[in-house]
Image 1 (cartoon, rainbow, N blue to C red):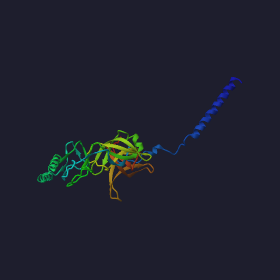
Image 2 (tube, rainbow, N blue to C red):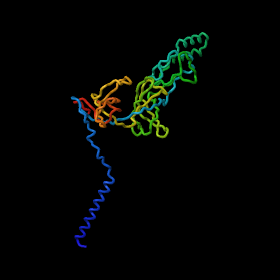
Image 3 (tube, rainbow, N blue to C red):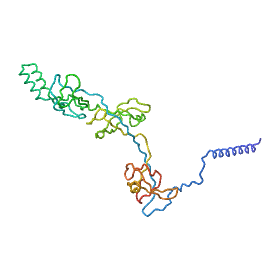
Image 4 (tube, rainbow, N blue to C red):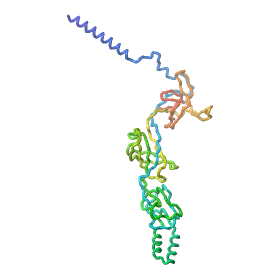
Amino acid sequence: MNAARVTLLVAAVAGLAFVAFWSVRDAFAPPVDDDFDAASLEPTVDLARGERYERVRSLTRDEYETFGGKIVLSGSLPVRAPQGMRAPVIEIVHEEGTFVKKGDVLVRFSKEWILREIEKAKKDGRDDLVKIGESWLEHVEIRAEQDGVVTDIYTELGRVPVDVGIPLMYIADRTAFSLRVQVPSTLTKTVAHLGARLTVDLTANLGKTTGTVSGYEDAAEGWIVLLVALDPKEGYERDLDATVRVPASKAEVALVPKSAVTKRTDATTNQSVNVVRVYEPSDKSIVERTILTDGDQGSDWIVTAGVGPGESIVVPDGTTNR
């Protein structure tokens, strides 16, 4: 075979390969919509003077979920009356949940009652009872032996203490309170890892507090119990209800200039609603839509429903959300 024939054969094979390649490519390529026209999405309705179109921007933000739990107490110390004390309680100085300092008076017993008992013992010639009564006078006021918080009170006005059994009250360290709350286990890798700081909402009109994730407990599959060590705050009580609100996912919302939003009165509910004018490409018209807002960001409303990112809205000329 001479050189000319070889050259022709190679050219023929290359041509066939080229045709085969483009045939396969076209077979697997996505179909092209010959009727699609990107320009059809662009607004075509003329606006009044002083108005213009603007694309709605998007914002990716955290979506929060709320989980409820209860306050637990890790430990407390009893406050007891002196042995043998028979005087009645006349004052309980602090309420449960209040802070006290070492040396603060917690409970007062009736000094007058003790003095009467001493005088009676003297008349009866009971020196032993006189000594006991005099020892009681040294403990008319029961004071805190440590800084802390009053957690539980087990006495009341007029009550006489007993030698053995229920203490007058308990005092715990100010850092002894934690929130025990069950959350999805996936959160331990993001916002609820050990050492994470969380904001806690308290019931009983106690407002908010903060705490640190200090440990975990096992729970049902897919869940875990967080132990959140609470920062010191007056008012904590064992079994008090509390919640944490944490970012659990991401969501895309719309940013709409505040100047593009007007208020209307809904004819059905007679309630005030927020309305924005939007270009509708399906029929090439401008329509009014009611939107739902969830806060703001600078000069924009954060919109969660009614209009989406990428849509064209009508804004006063000279205003932009870029």
